[in-house]
Amino acid sequence: MPGTTRDSIHPWQFGLVVLAALTPLPPLAVAAAEGFVDLPLAILTSVVTGLPLLLHARPAGFAVLIGCVAPVLLFWSFAGAMAGMFVFLPSVLQLLLALGADPRRGPVPAKVMAAGGLLLSVAVPAHFLT
Image (cartoon, rainbow, N blue to C red; front, side):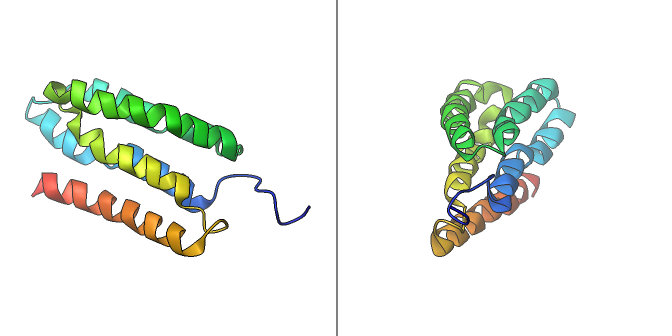
């Protein structure tokens, strides 16, 4: 039926996953300049965070991959805290918010989730860079 199937994820969902991967990088770059963070490890973690983007054309696979990446990233945020990976903790929340940020399924919850993800993208770097 036309109009009932989703060919791909919504751009808001795509954007939130991109933000989840990029938001921790400015604080990590500053910490790396001071010698506190292993920057290649941080970049690798950011690449893993963005893996759900590979399945943007398959919403079911996108959701499953977020369901796999988010718990691993949550564990890594705590386990890698000594290496500075704790700044990826908000990325876990952004990934989970991306799951519900589809206005085709519910316009009001999607706006709230997208706004929450955007707020995290502003708040995290602002907190660490000031």
